[in-house]
Length: 280
Image 1 (tube, rainbow, N blue to C red):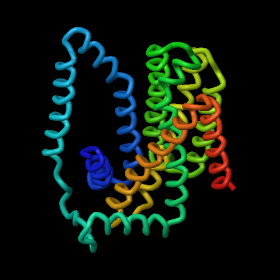
Image 2 (cartoon, rainbow, N blue to C red):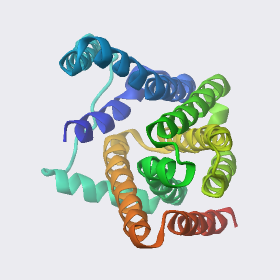
Image 3 (cartoon, rainbow, N blue to C red):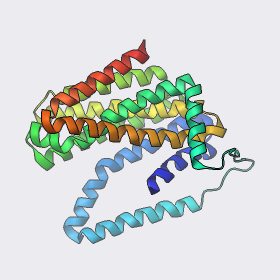
């Protein structure tokens, strides 16, 4: 519940504090340190748990939140900024207005649909990683760690590259290319059974998926009107969580009786059809 409020709010606030020409780079830099945390965080937590216990790991995590919240207290809205007033008196009204805005903007709607299908496939890949490591690689926990670290490393490289490109990263062509590569690489992952190939493909998945996600998000941030930014960010997060949950549930349900490879390859095929529709 806390994350569902804070993430859209933080991304909605970003353009207030970063000038427009640097906005895309700021989004990419944010993604880079998020991805760094994806594979550095578990390593640090493992060391703390081993030498100082689980309670200390939770305490350090809480301290990290304290630092984050303290930094927010020092943020000041730039002089002259006026918060657009909402015409609605309920959260539900804001959600409906945000969805209406998305439906009325074809470019944003198209990018959001591709983003949701990519996130559904990505969430399923992430949540099925333990099963993939155990059943296909035969590696257990070590295989999961290696695969997720490889994906995180690829995503980190992508985020740094996008930060350097700046506004050129907000490109629909780049989103289309990245989605195609990420989808094909996910399919390839489920056709290999060695940890080295899986790790190499994981780097490609991380590179392409982060490029798709950050480029889409940057384009939407530049295209949305200031009055609708908060509603759009909230709806995006709501739909992304929903898509990830549905994708994982569908694939997991089928995998329980049919094995893991077939439902994942079917999901890859569906994502390719969606990609082809928007490409054409």
